[in-house]
Amino acid sequence: MPFRRTPLSLCLALPLLAGSLPALAQSGLTPMRTIDIPPSRIEPQESLTLDLPDPDGAPEADAAETIAAPDASDIPEERSAEQLALEAIAAAEAAKLRDANAAQLATKQAQLEQITADQRAQQDRLAKYREERAAYSAAMSDYEAQLAAARADRARWEADVAACRAGDRLRCAYGDGRR
Image 1 (cartoon, rainbow, N blue to C red):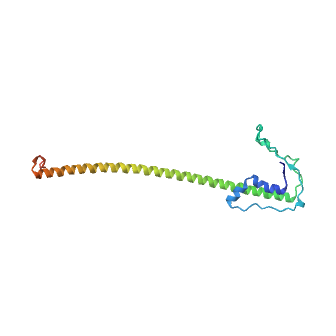
Image 2: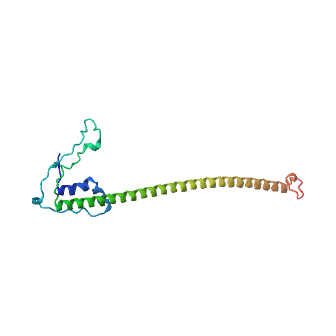
Image 3: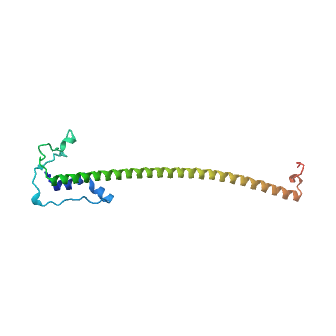
């Protein structure tokens, strides 16, 4: 399908080819300005044909050769002031879009790095918590074992005291270490 290069089509197609619509929608930038040119002042120009590879055919040797680049004979030598103004506006808008896209990419990269750092910090905190929890559980197990041993010793001592009072002198405690 031939593509006609007119000042208006260049002004509209350049930002679309540069991928400006998603960038404009996300960045909140003002939309591209256009200049209304009455149809009577637009000069018909020769059409530009793009040679695209056949999707079912063999792949092309060089992808850069698939789009025919205009040579000096295709470009009209005399450009009107309106055409130059439109080209300048389109170039400025494309530069703005490239800058906005670069800024968005840098912001996205910084956010991804921050998210990755936050995730690592969370994993470190979780690992530290698990280690502390394991140490606490080990300390509580040791405490419970000591408490059980102390209770067993007290129960044995109370049984010895009760037996001593009942008359079993073998279980009585002596102050000099004899039994």
